[in-house]
Length: 403
Image (cartoon, rainbow, N blue to C red):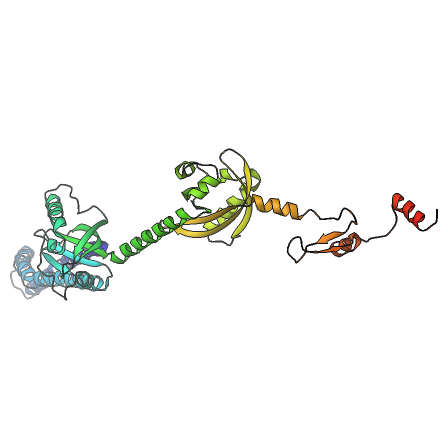
């Protein structure tokens, strides 16, 4: 909007320049017309026999031009010029008013006396005033008491050619005051408005109440999340751009750190993963931060502070932490689970009859005992053939009376 205000002055200047150029054209054409007219009259007099010389005709032309042209300018051209300039200024003002009134941001113009010259609808609504209710008010009356001195000193410093704390400082967080006395947060940008015959200033303001409320809600939510994660008995961490930004005590202890701060200062989180798994996890982090689909749960071998490794199950998801995309990871040590799985892989075989207990589909230790050939045929593609080992063959022949 400040750029639009500047273009307003530029439009008026262009209009005035065009009018001046038109005036110059009218002037030389007027001189030419007057001169040709006078010469024509003199020639007619010459033809008619009147004692008029060419020099007398030239002198008559000069005198006529000297008299007629100032009168022509004063009576016609000057009023037209002023009218055209006023029309151009009015058109520029109308465009500015139209743009300002439909703008979503508040716009206010005030003079060196800090009295308001113009305020758009958004600015009036922002401060709780009816249309036209701000006209002529002191600008600082729309500011809380503790900010009025800073504002006045900023305007004074600018008028004296010194650097102020408000004008020309870009977007600045400030506070406004509504008509009912309510204080509210705003963002303002104050600049000098040139080309109006007097020193004026324009403020572009935006009510940031909702944004501040959203930021506060996020901070409150994150504090609750932080407090909840602190007390969890499982390891939890938040990772942003490859670095730890939060770990709970359970995570620190799991990785061999005595204090949370020690682990946060450790550095790259990938250094806590064994080299064989490091590149895979790095790709997970990258794709998750980009919003792509990645496994929410995966196994990985992690490293403790002393360099020992342990198998872990990681549950990871994408979250927003302090306004930035991050990964929330829950880490579970599954060393005991791996041990149990190893024990479960050992087939229970009877040391007397050689049968195998099949625990598939039932509680561990309560399965039916099956012959070895039946178990192998049911759980593999192997074909079983029957024969005798040497010892059994001797015993069989003895029992059957064949030897």
